[in-house]
Image 1: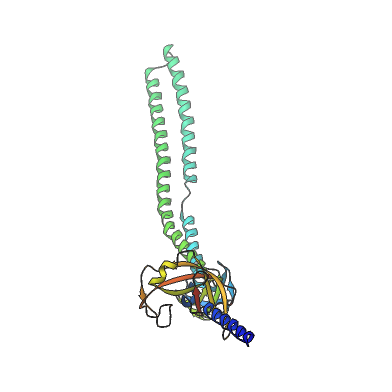
Image 2 (image 1 turned 30 degrees about the vertical axis):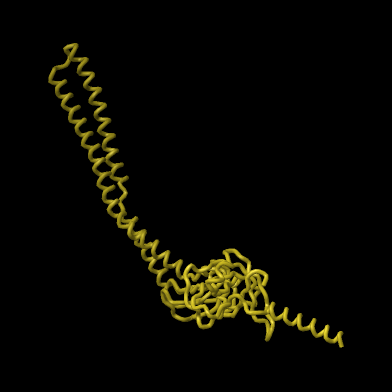
Length: 314
C-alpha cells in the first residue's frame, strides 16, 4: 500500500512539472516577412514572364521583358538624325587649299620682285638705272604684300565662317544625344529585373498580357529568415534587450510544439492597444509593446503562422 502511494506521489510531481514547463508563453504573435511588390517600369506587352509562385529567384535576375520595339525604332530614328547632322557639316579644306595655293603664287611673285628690287638698287648706285625704276618696283612689292595679306585674311575668314556654321549644325545634336540616352534608359526598363533574392509569394500577371508603368507584376519576400511580430506588456520590458536570444514555439500537431531559437531585433518605443488576436502573459493589460524576433527558417515557417515566445530558460 505504501509503495502504491509513493508511485502515485511521483506521478503527480512529474505531471505538475510538465504542466509548469508547458505553461502560458510570455508573448505571442504572427510571422511576417519584408514583402516587395515588383512593378513594371515600362508599358507594353509582356513578351516573356518566366516566374511561378513558390519559385526562389536570385537578386538581379531577369525574369521577363516588355515589348520595346517602339522604343527601339525611336532610338534608331534619332540616331539617324544625328548621323544626318554630320553630313550637313562643311569641310573647309578645299577652300583653304585653294587660297593657300594662291598665297604660294603670291609669295613667289614677291620673291621675284624683291630680287628685282635688289638688282635695280645695285644698278642705281652705278648710275645704270633711274629712280623711277626703283619707285615702280617698290610699288609692285607693296601691292604684292597687300595681296598676300588679303589672302591670309580670306583663309582666316573662311575657316571661322565654316567653323561657326558647323558648330550651329552640331549643336542640334546635343538634344538628340540626350534623347538617345532617354530611349536607352527606357529600353533597359523593358527588362524586368528581380530586386531582391527571395521566394515568389503572389503572381499578378501572365506572359502575353498588356502591362503599364507602375502595375504590380508579382510579390516576393526573403523567407530564409522570417520575423515573428509579438507583443509584450510594460512589465515585461525589463526582461528583454536587443540581441537577446529567445525561445520561439510553433504548433507541431495537436499538443506539441516545434521550437526555434530567435533573436530579438526590435522593440517599439511606443505602447499600443492590445490587438484582438493577441494574448499576452498579463491578459488584463490594455497596452502592449510590439517586438520583432528574427528566426532562421527551415522551410516550415510560413507568413501568417501563429507563434509564441518565452524569455530566458522558462
